[in-house]
Structure formats: C-alpha cells, structure tokens
Length: 326
Ligand code: TRP
Image 1 (cartoon, rainbow, N blue to C red):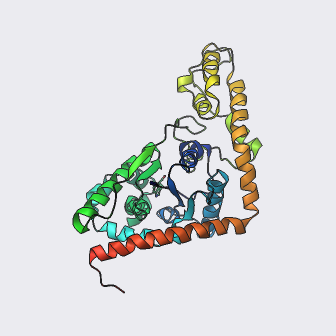
Image 2 (image 1 turned 180 degrees about the vertical axis):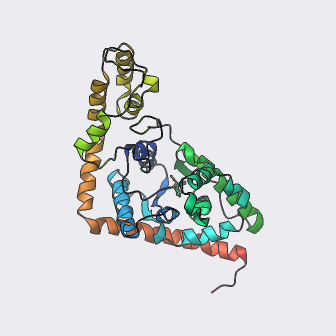
Image 3 (image 1 turned 120 degrees about the horizontal axis):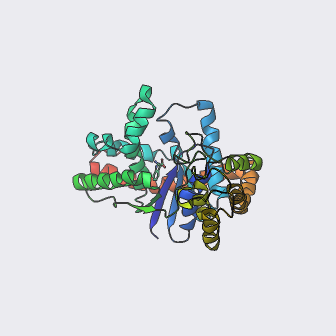
C-alpha cells in the first residue's frame, strides 16, 4: 500500500480549523493508504514554550487524533521524539540542503518576524526536519494545507539532492491537498489559529463554543437584520460548507441574500450541525482522557512500529554515506 505521512504540532488545543483542514482528511485516507500520523513535538521546540506543559500538550493532541477516528488498528499514531531517527536523518539532510532554499520559506520568514528575539537555527531548519519526518518512512504522500505545500516541495528537492549525491534511496513525496474550505478565525480575517487566539477548540465547553460562534464576525456589511448579506464573504457560510449537508447550502445562501434569515439563526443551524459531528469525538476524547494507559499504549505501539521502519531506512542511509559500521 502507498504510504502517507503527516504531522501536527502539539498545541493541545485542536480547533475546528485543524479538524476540517487536516484531521478529517487524515481519517478519510485510512482505508486506501498505509498511514503514519505524528505529533511533532521537536518542531514545537523552535519557539519559546513552558517545559512543564509540553508533555501534556502532546498527550492531549494524541487523544484528539485517536478520538477523531485515527484508530491505531488502522494506522500508526506516534510522537516524533519517540523515534529519534527523525532527527538523525534531519542532520544528514542538513548536509544536502542549500541554505538559500530554507531562507526563502514563507513560514520561516513569517516566524522570524513573530519571534524576532529568538531566530534560532531550529526555526530555519524546521522544514528540513519535516522532510526527514516524511522520508524516514519513504512516504510518497503528504496530506497538508496550502500553507505547507512549499515545505513538501522542499522535501522533494532534498530527496533529489540526496539521491543524486548518495544513491537512490528516497521517493519524491507529493502533497495531497485538502479540498476543504479554509476556515477563518472568529474575527473573520485571518486563518483560524491557536496562536492568534481566534479559534473554537473542539474540546471546549459547549457553552464556550456557542459563545464564540454567536459573537463571530459575519459579513461586515450586513449591519441590520434587514440588510441582505453576501455568503461569499461570510466565514459562517464557509463553516456551513464544512459542516452542513450540501442540500442546505443553497437555501442558506438565498436566505442570507434576501435577508429572510438572520445571522444568529444561521449560526444556530450551523452550531447544531457542528455539534452533531463533534459530539461523538468529544465523548470519545473524554473517555480517553480518563484512560491514559490506553493512550500511552497506543503511542508506544506506534513508536515501536515506526522505529522499525525508520531504523531500516537509516541503515541504508549510513551505508550510502559510507560510514564506519558500529
Ligand atoms: N509543519 C506542519 C504544520 O505546521 C507540521 C508537520 C511537521 C508536518 N512535520 C510534518 C506535516 C510532516 C506534514 C508532514 O502543519
């Protein structure tokens, strides 16, 4: 079976943007691909963080992955730092990656602006570690959002450079782009994100979620209830596209354009649909939170299987490099 790899940062607080943009697609690939999904904790070390919280963040993120349906019987769920071959391969990749290539990465440039006082080597090396994540399993397919396509392209180049210099070991991985609509934050301007604080977490209290949705920005030009709205510029309509059945879209579209439906009613309908899909996930997550042993065991199994695959790749890599065998 063709192999898929993808990773998610251990934010601990997965939101509906992550869910629609990534996790839902990850689940959809389970039957057709041999999938490895990782909580990429070493990537999170590139920025300042509270060390006493990191372990819990990884655990909470893993719980959400499992609760969403990434069943450990059907795929490998693992924590990046549990398989040290990722960072080992990253070193080798460092030696074939031109500095100019990583310097022009959009995410590096953005993060350098956000963290001016801590522009460390890891921040710059981030996409090289990402390439190692993928290629240590020789995965050919990488489900990601638009913002990560540049990094997947860099992994292709790294694979090419390595193969050219040391021999054909790695495939050139391809991004699998999700066709999911891009959900903006509750302020309706930037992409929903944990760091921007404009998110609706999938495990938040139901009343908290409704509060955030109730006060979320819609079409800014629709001021009074009687004003017609434009669904095309409304983040709530985008969320309907993600959560409501297709048949409902045209009616909501018409209702908005003719002002026969108000924003608050539109949000109520959305919330109902959203909760219908999220409630089973929330319940499962709650069960898992109370069963740490099960979750840790799933991660242990994941790491064990992944280490076996990664160790095999690294053996070949060390041979290709001509290193003295231990
Ligand atoms: N950089 C990715 C993101 O921010 C996370 C990630 C790390 C990843 N390693 C990966 C995604 C490997 C795909 C494959 O979303």
